[in-house]
Image 1 (tube, one colour):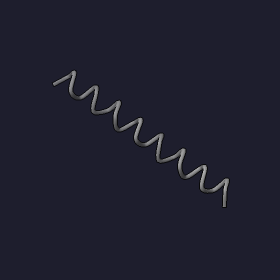
Image 2 (cartoon, one colour):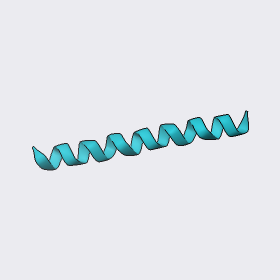
Image 3 (tube, helix red, strand yellow):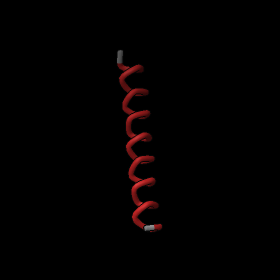
Image 4 (cartoon, rainbow, N blue to C red):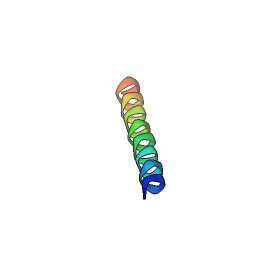
Length: 30
């Protein structure tokens, strides 16, 4: 449970950071 929860949080954090990076790039380009 702890290991799966840890990896799930890591994946969600990396996904959220990727979304923020994409939004920042879009704002910078447009």
